[in-house]
Amino acid sequence: MPLTELIIDGFKSFADKTTIHFGDGITGIVGPNGSGKSNVTEAIRWAMGESRAKSLRGNNMRDVIFAGSEFRKPLNRAEVTLVFDNKKRDLHFDSDQVAVTRRILRSGDNEYLINHQNVRQKDVRELFLDSGISQNSLAIISQGRVDQILNSRPEQRREIFEEAAGVLHFKQQKEEAQAQLEKTNDNLIRINDLVKELE
Ligand code: ATP
Image (tube, rainbow, N blue to C red):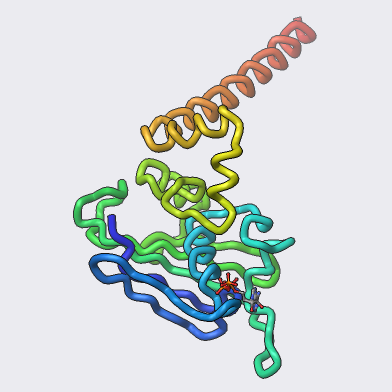
């Protein structure tokens, strides 16, 4: 499922709309220190639904919006779009091309779109969950992450294998179902109490 295009607009150091085309084979991004190389991979992770500001080297998610420079005013929104070639249907979405967009405003409001249609963050996460490139997967290894993986606890390492094996998706669905079941049980207890009171 090749990532064919990355469009960054107002995200971190990318004040101007910038499109990166990924051709066949290996693409290398080179540049001096502080020129924005890591910001490119962070843009990808952010668009895939990253919700931890710290993991994007910020304190608040709004920190991803271009904060201004000597010559440019700060911007009020950031937007990143990932375009995937989905001819082989690696993503469970019935379209040959899938464009995933995330947008954030200074108010902190986030918007997610798949092929220009508004969706929930959950939909974007689920889209990537079985693809092997979800935000915590080993498809994106940022600086310092190798040490982190080597030093991780066995349970954390197990999660990595579970994701690779495609189990994580079902585990998350199971957890959601269990939480729903608990809520339903609580409601049932409350209803029984009410019925008893009325009898
Ligand atoms: P290195 O080679 O040292 O790892 P790099 O090329 O990976 O550097 P990045 O870390 O991606 O560079 O980019 C850092 C630059 O991004 C800094 O100049 C920083 O000021 C800028 N930057 C980060 N967040 C914002 C923001 N919200 N607004 C404007 N610029 C930002």
